[in-house]
Amino acid sequence: MRLKALDQISISAVKADSLRPGEPFNINDAAGKDLLERHPTIFERLDAGEAEKAEPAPLNKMATPPLNKSTARKRAKAD
Image 1 (cartoon, one colour):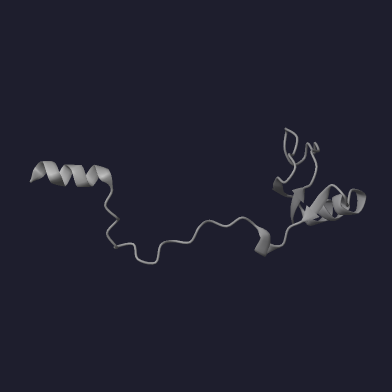
Image 2 (tube, one colour):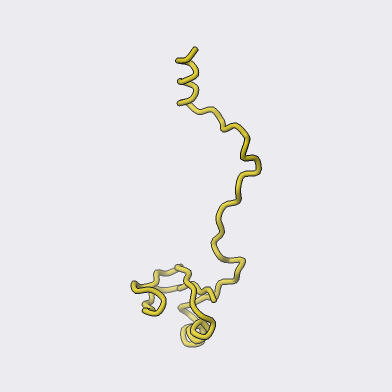
């Protein structure tokens, strides 16, 4: 189960330091249900769709990058 802390709290079974507000963490289902029942205002359950995802890969990896000042100078000096 993936939960997000809404307030600063310390749970030694999850992390040695305190959990910061907005910090997501993983915990087993039984302990997660217990935390949500005991502290509904401090924790929020994250669905699989809400987890942070990496940026998608570019569509065309072989496309030439745009010219910038450094390559323009190198080309001007070479000519």
